Image (cartoon, rainbow, N blue to C red; front, side, top):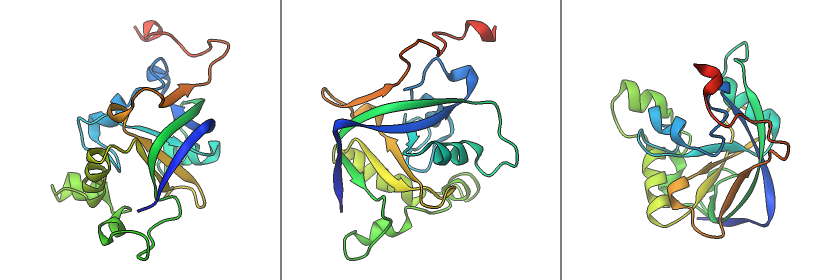
Length: 175
C-alpha cells in the first residue's frame, strides 16, 4: 500500500457545497446521511477534489444540469493518507484494493450488501489513516480525497479558505 503526506505546506483542494449547508464547510455529516464511496451511513467523511472541475463533476454526479452550489477551496495538511491516486496496481496493493471503484450505491442500496470500498475504508480507519486519495470516476484525470474526520488529530488541518467571511455562519436564511 502506498502512503503519502499532504503537507507540510498546505495542499489546496476544492468542494462544491449545497447552499443550505455552506455554513458547515468542513463537516462530513452530509456524507454520513446516506454513506459514500468510502464511508458507511453514520460515518462522517469529507470528500474533496484537487481541481475545481473535478469537484464540479463530483457534485453533479452525472446530472445534465448543475444544482445550485457554492465553490469552496480548502487548505489541507494530513499525515498519513492512503494514496490510491494512481489507481490499483497489483504489484503495490493488496488484492482487496482492486475493487475500490465498485458500484457501491447498487451494492449497498439494492443488493443490501457491504461494498468493498466500505471494507477498505474500515481498514484505513482502523490503521489510523486520515484519508484516502483516489482517482475520480466522474472526471478523467481528476483526484479526490476522502477525509476521515474522526481520525484527525493535532497537526492535521482541513481549513476552508474564506478570508472575507463570505460563507454563511448559520442556517438563518433557510427559515
